[in-house]
Length: 201
Image (cartoon, rainbow, N blue to C red; front, side, top):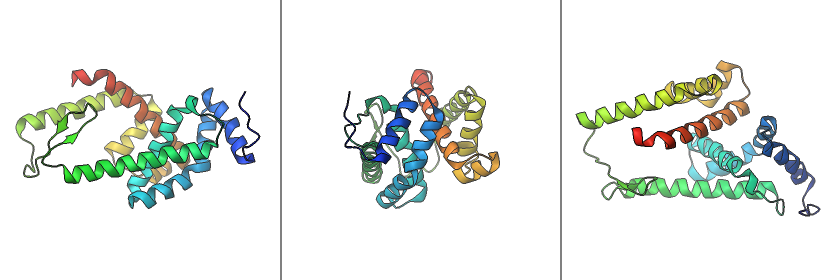
C-alpha cells in the first residue's frame, strides 16, 4: 500500500478519479481532463507559440497519460506526472518541427526509422504519388467508417470538414471537454486499426 499522506487534498481527489478511470469510468477521465486542460494548454502554448498546435498537444498529452494510467504511482501528484508527460510531448513536437525544416534534403525519419525525403521543388505529386495518396485517403476513410457512430462523426467533422473543436461542440451540442476526450479516443482507435492494417496500404 502506497502512503498518500504527503499528497494535497487536490491530489488525493485526483487519486480517487484515477482509480475510477482505471476501471473504465469515462466521467472520471473527463473530470481529470477538465481539471488540468487549461493549465496544460497554456504550458503548450508558451512552448509552441501556436494555438492549434497547443490544442492538439494538450489532447495528445492527456491521451498519453490516460494510455499509461496504470503506470501512475501516487508516490507523487498526478499533476506532476501529467505535466512531465505534456512537457516531454511538447519538446518532441518542437524537435520534430525543427527537423522538418532542417532536414528537407536529408529526409525526415518516420515512425519506422526510415528517412522520408521531401522534394521542395515538387509542388504537385507525380501520377504514382497521387495514386498512393488517393489509396491512403480511401483506406483512412474506410477505417473511419468502422468507428462507432459517435467517434466517426467527430473524426469526420474534425479532419474531413476541418471544423474547430469549438465548432464541433456547438454543432453537436456537446461540452467542449467531451468533444476533445472522445476525439482522442477515436484517434487512439484509428491508430490501432492503422497499425494492424499498415501492410495493406
